[in-house]
Every structure is written in structure tokens, then in C-alpha cells.
Length: 141
Image (cartoon, rainbow, N blue to C red; front, side):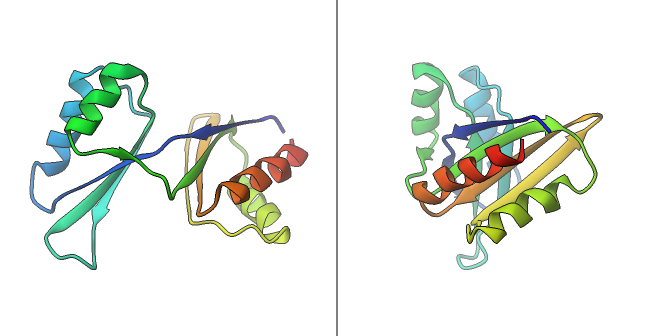
């Protein structure tokens, strides 16, 4: 199985938990030409009335400037990998099982399949865990 594995910077910002907050954040990035491949937004359960949004990728000075003006910052505590490959039954289970077998703990995991392709985003607390994961996953390929 061929896996394309790449490191990715994740950008994050807080927002108010009200209609239109996410739309405004994404519009700021779109005006700067961002073509986002991954967005996760959710409420902050520990801080009522607020939410958080994570996006990737941002490319070039114009997009980064717009992101900063919209309150986004590149996460320093979230180390993320993007994996793309052909879709196959049980692939998410196989990836996570391989990492678990080697003692690598995930901070977050998401995946989606569209037709014959799939993409996974894996998040780790430490850069060393992300590097270890790359080595483990390359052995699967």
C-alpha cells in the first residue's frame, strides 16, 4: 500500500460560539486565496460561549498575514501529519494499530474517504512522536 505522508502546520484560533463566527474566519482566509484542505471547528466545552477552529494548509505571506489578522496562530503544541492513499477497508484501524503497537499515542485523528482516495490527519503532542509515527507508517507502505 502506498502512503503519502507529510508534515503539516496547523493554524488555530478561538471564536465566539454564535452564528457566523466560523463563516467570518473562513472568509478572511478565502479572501487571501487560501485553499483549505482541512477544517475542524468545535465549541470549547470548558469555556461557554466560545469555540475553536483548526485549519491547514496556509501558504505564502498573503495567507499567513490574513490568518494572523483574523487571530490565527501556527500551533506550537500540535504536531500533525497528513496521509493520503488509496481507500481500503480497515485502513484507519491498521494505521492506528501500528502506532499503538509501537507505543505512539495520538492526540487527535480524523479521516475521510472520497471515491477511491482517502486522507487522514494525525495529531501528536510531541514532534518526536510525529517523527516516530512517520517511521512506523513508512514500514506499512
